[in-house]
Image (cartoon, rainbow, N blue to C red):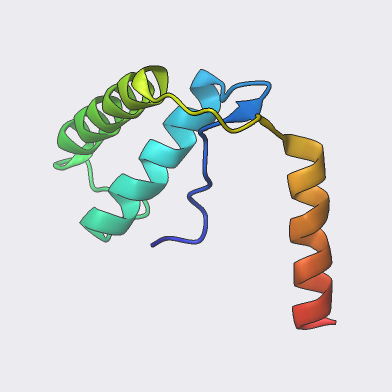
Length: 88
């Protein structure tokens, strides 16, 4: 799994369209092996990002949970603490 793709489900506030698109972009980059596609592949790359973002948004809107929503700031602080412990 690409480390730049973050969990988007069950957060308060919910994931934005920008976050969904960024995750889709990271996924397509990882699968295609392109950071920036050539002009010949640009249309296919952009269409793949759009399709993945659309599927991700549909998935997020259809998921249900009984767990309480997580707070983005608290999760970010935990991640920073883990990184600090790991990397010093």
